[in-house]
Length: 147
Ligand SMILES: CC(C)(COP(=O)(O)OP(=O)(O)OC[C@H]1O[C@@H](n2cnc3c(N)ncnc32)[C@H](O)[C@@H]1OP(=O)(O)O)[C@@H](O)C(=O)NCCC(=O)NCCS
Image (cartoon, rainbow, N blue to C red):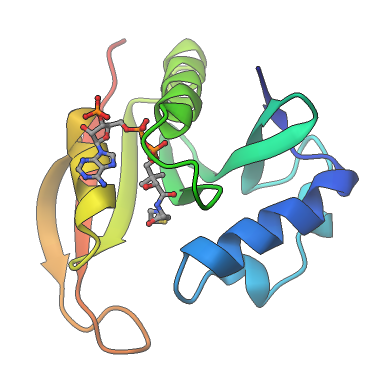
C-alpha cells in the first residue's frame, strides 16, 4: 500500500470516486490537472494498492493551518481502514512540517464522515447554516496538532 501525491494517470479514478461518493464535489467542477505540480495548493493525495486508487484526500495549506477539503474511499471499500490510513499519513506529515491546526467542514447529515472525523479527535466548533448550495448546514471541525 502506498500513499503519495496524485499523478496525471490518477485523475480519472479520483473523479469517479468523487462522483460516486461526494455530493457537489469540487473536483467535478474544476480540472485537477493544475494540482499536479509539487508546489500546487491544494494538494491531492491518494492511497494506492496493487495499482488501484482506493482513496483520495484534498488538502489545502494555509500557513501553519491546513484544511481537508475532501476525503473519500472507493465505493464498496468503506470500513476497511483505508480512510484512516490516509488520514493518519496526512496528520503525521502535517505535524512533521509544523502545521498547528487542521480544519474541515462536513454536511450535518453525513453521519459516517462525522463518526470518522470524531474518531481522530476532530471537534465541532461551529455550525454554518445553509452553507452548501442545496441549503444543508455544515459542521465545522478542528483538531490541534501536537508540536
Ligand atoms: C468518511 C470515509 C472517508 C471513511 O473512510 P473509511 O475507510 O470507511 O473509514 P475507516 O474504515 O478508516 O474507519 C475509521 C473509523 O471511522 C469511524 N467510521 C467510519 N465509517 C463509519 C460509519 N459508516 N459509521 C460509523 N462510524 C464510522 C469508525 O470509528 C471507524 O473505526 P472502526 O471501523 O474501527 O469502528 C468514507 O466513509 C467515505 O468515503 N465516505 C464518502 C465520502 C465522504 O462523505 N467524505 C467526507 C466528506 S468530504
